[in-house]
Length: 355
Image (cartoon, rainbow, N blue to C red; front, side, top):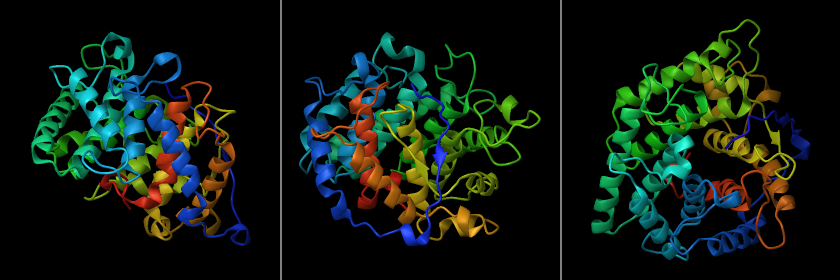
């Protein structure tokens, strides 16, 4: 579903920056949320281009609504959120896999990981005891499926353990993000499970701090900078973790650059990369990069204020009149959901995305 993309990195000078306020994007976000809610199907799901990828798209759409401040019980989008959670519960397999039948089997691990992130966030914000208890059991089974699906080297592949042929860094990053979200919500997640996943990513990292799709690529001579979305995703994942952070985090952060320029209409894979960079910048705030990488040059430091300026301007200019953001590959529901998550990071409502 995700294209590995090369992104154009730009450094913003101090004189070019201004401190945007949430009001700069309030109307933009409101219009996007209204459009997104209207795209929900009567069964509670959202779908991508050609009615595909309903697991992933529904998870991201649900996260966008949760980040507005709505919960399963309260708020403007509570009805849509309840429908989405009910859809996931109805389509969950007996083994805990959060899937929607054979149409999505080919990439069921990545969809499962996104769904785990959404359901954990919904659980974390719900105050209905009975529903929360049911949702907690669903998430516990989903964690058990993740445990059973982990490969011998500690990573995950795009398909479940009975179907998989190989593991990869992107699937591992996504699963770790879902598992850390579950842990932050109070669900028990085995430490050995996440430690092994972290070790997998460390072994897929080159000497310069770039994360590659495969371990063999990272250890090849002249391996280079790695894939931007994988490196940023690895950092975003481990900034979610409240416990000790891996030593490789310094190399990962040192591999990142201050800002990224995206044009979703020109490159359908860029929005996902942009989300990972935005999550990193938000989590680091103004001084977090320096604390993790004391040797970084001032010009290479990533901060939320500078990154947010470029992000907001780009996303505002690319939103269409009806409120959506276009995506030639995955469809506008997908890209609109990601854009809204980025634009609502400052709301700081969800522990899984908190600083």
